Image (tube, rainbow, N blue to C red; front, side):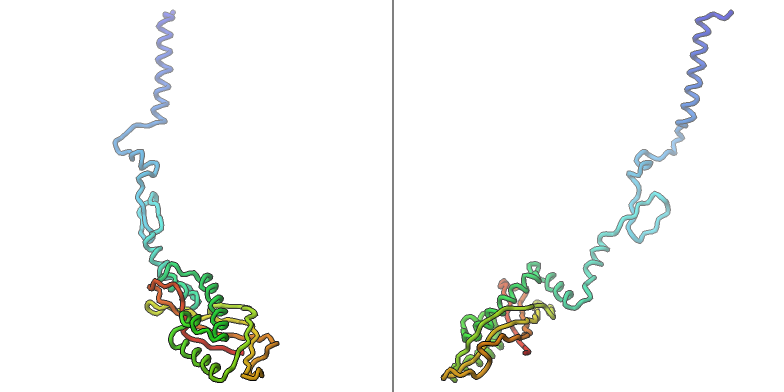
Length: 229
């Protein structure tokens, strides 16, 4: 009959051998050709930029940001007005189209009101030399004839940008104004020679404004006018 202590030791040795064999089967043996842990988990995987070919499945493709920036720089709106406004914005980061329209609306009211009143001092800083000369000529003619203008600005129904361009450092924006006002010109006797003091008149004016985008002065100058109605 086997010695009981010896039998116990033999049994434990057999159990340990079975456990070691199973661990060996699961974990395997190191051969010296194993990939480092970082590679197995993708930490050192090579990075591939867009457009590069890859020879393995472990290459991670990411967009080429320099290419994206270059494409964004050359992609411009198809609409000529939007493209022109973008050119102006790129040349003058402080430019904002909505802010410009607000300023143009205020300038329109000030100019037509000052023109009717013959106020040259208010008109001069808002107009270029050519436009001021034309306005001044009309005012001088009224003064010579002794005429007086009764003018009431009713309001603007609409104001929208119709053209926008950047030529060198000069930005040019043309705005269409749909306005309403009451206007009547009277002679020295008080008789109405033009307009109607009781009728609201609908007028569409097309005005062009310019500004040097590199100048310190943020104000725009009226450089051309045309109208209808």
